[in-house]
Image (cartoon, rainbow, N blue to C red; front, side, top):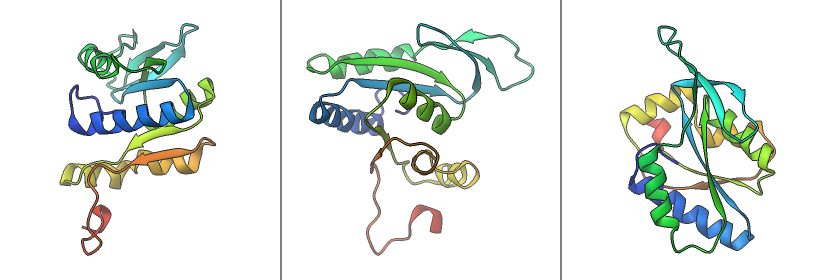
Length: 160
C-alpha cells in the first residue's frame, strides 16, 4: 500500500487485496514500509525496531503503522468479513514484504503498479519495480494490480 492515507491507488490495491483474501479464505496482512529507515531488530510481537538512514539522526524507534492510513484502512474494512491485521516495516519494500510473506506463510503478495510520471520513472530506473523484485527474489506468488495501464499503442513507462 502507498503511504498516503486515502490515496485512490491505495484504495484500488486494498479493494483487490480484500477480494483475493475473501476468494482464498485467507487473512489479509497489510504492510506499510518506511523507506527512510532500516530494520535493526524484529520484535516478538511482530513490530520492528528501526534506525533512520540519515546518519545525523541516530534515534532508534519502534515502527508504527501510519495512524491516518490505519484509520482509513479500518474504515474501508469495517464491514468486511475477513480477518486482517496491520504491520509497520522499515527498509527496502521488496525485501521487507518478502520477509513478511515468509514469516506469515502468505498465500500471495498483492502489490500495485506505480502511476506514470517523471518521478516514478526515475525511481524505478534507479531502484527497480517492487513487483519485479518480488517476482524474482522470493517464493510466494505475486499479484500485481494495474493502477494506470497504458494503451497498446502507447510506450511503456520505462520506454519514455
